[in-house]
Image 1 (cartoon, rainbow over the protein chains, first blue to last red):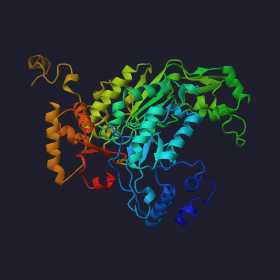
Image 2: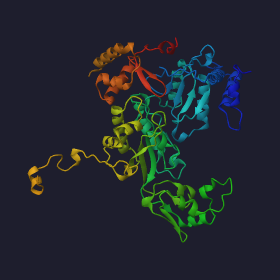
Image 3: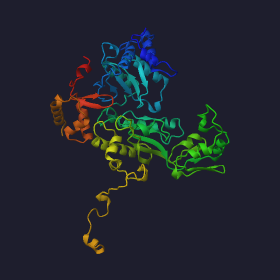
Image 4: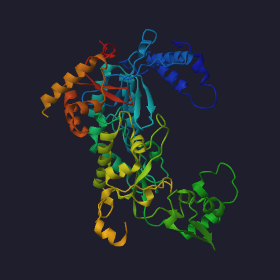
Length: 437
Length: 79
């Protein structure tokens, strides 16, 4: 018998989709039964109380969680988020119910043994409730008490070889796609750079001194599987400079029906015979492809790396060989000022260890934002407020056509004195030789 | 600025403002120290390490305060 009646939550279990309510009930039942005789370090009933407090919130239309707190582990300003319930008498199991963010492994590769160890630790010292993964990518442990924090931190860092993630006004846990470990589209080793920058910027990850959160995300190609372009302040998207490689025989194979388009991904229903003109050439956003006399041709100069043709015909088309990445700046979710996508800052840069050129840009961006950014202002908002030109100046990057989002949006050019030959001064006598008063 | 001098300045200024607020943004601290953020960070980190300051976090934003100050202090020390 459940500790609290939850008619509103029960309704969420109806329907064909999976339900977090069912998951919580399952965990509550498992804690009540405790088949492995775990010596629970937080209230055994805590999951029942999560269900109770959530039901009450649905009834009241208000949250019963208080905002933030001063808990943490020694030396770290992030990774732990204080959470307190404002109805502690009714729900003692969640009176103190802090969240921990754990840095997920690169590409989210786990061994089952590691996952089991994480779960065992969290069942023992926390609520057992996890979020795999939070929107920044971390493993999220939901619900523990203050005395458990250092214990968990010690266990993770000493026995699991595992660090906490970022929270608050920090560099957030960098996140990446599987990259070249499994994907033939990867233009650089996402896991290598994600790991290298995580190590390099430990201080920024753990000790908050930014105006607000700051996110790095690494996508191996423009398919953008970790959505870096939409969700990270600095986004790293793999790209190539030379031509898309074409295997004309394989193109003929697709046209002839020998190979399934999209590697068979949409084979759930019959879409009819593959039509290269309609499904590939006609959908090219820049119209840079043609298919004539059984040959596919691409005007690579016009290609914007949308990836559509490569995704549809992966056997026939392949990314180029001169590979690197593009850096985009300023994406954010719509809390203030609406959502923003990243703006292209560096069209092409090689991603090679030790990534010195990339670090130089990152640090220049940070210096500018730390000095000019208002409290709780994301990089994207600062770019909007002061202008993209200021970001170019701060990073010492010369404006190039790729920086122009759309032509003639603003027809004015304001020159600076140092950009004009001779500055604002002129030799009046020389001028008068050619122009009367 | 020497560390001890910076510490005195921060504690003095934060104590002075305690009537109106107990939590401060990093930028407020850098402003009090009159330093660039990167330089100020070294001192602020040391102040936290020595428990002169403590972190507060909402989860999305971090702030700093003198230990034991602020409305939530009593609840959050879990004594």
